[in-house]
Image (tube, rainbow, N blue to C red):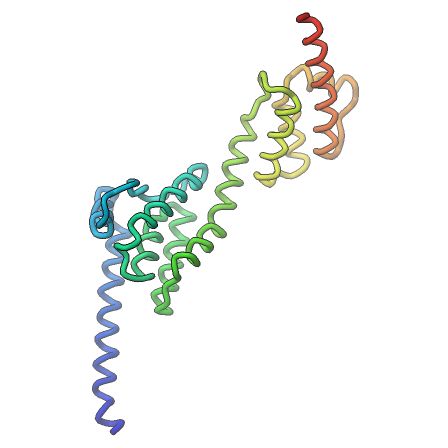
Amino acid sequence: MSSQNQPDVNTLLHNMHAQILVLTTQLAELQAAPPAAAPSVEKKFNKKVEIIADPGAFKGDRARFAEWWTKLQIWIKVNWDAFANDFEVATVVLSQLKGPVAGQYAQVRLQECYTAGVWPAWDDLKVEIEKYLKPQAERDWARQQIHSFKQGNIRTDDYVTRFLALSIQGGLGNEHAIELLERNVNPHIAEQLYLQDMRQDKLSDTAEEIRKIGRAIELYKMHRCR
């Protein structure tokens, strides 16, 4: 009985292998396709009337990750009925990740899923992508912002509060954050910080001294205007 069933098993395995080979080839073509080929993905999966446009690929601009990620999740939800299974959702989403970091992650993940023959459910894939890309994207964005975040006409209390938030989000070290704060705060405040020898070793202490100086200067200006 087992010898009679053996050819059927071999045939089944052969057919499965051939099918996987076809899917892998299609996936490789999809990833290698130039931007002009993107509408083919949209045409295949976007069977509903568009409520939101396909956001396209994430090309590695970390400052735009949050915006792109939100739009992609909405697009997936709107077109959910167009996807037959986890394989289709995962391959479409992962194939949209480009760039040296996101693209490498997607390539490795696709290979892992193909080898194991298991594709993550959408809810699990969302958690995975956010865990891998979102924190880094937010850190990069915060670091870009804080380097050019000058006080200008912003009230000192408001400026220091926002600066500290960006510092935490960007994961800046204590000394680097103090240096940036002293450089970007109002020059009159920075001058008084040095003249009155109020500089501190901790960012939180430096921020508090800057608040005091800023309040005093702002109060003085307010009385002069009366």
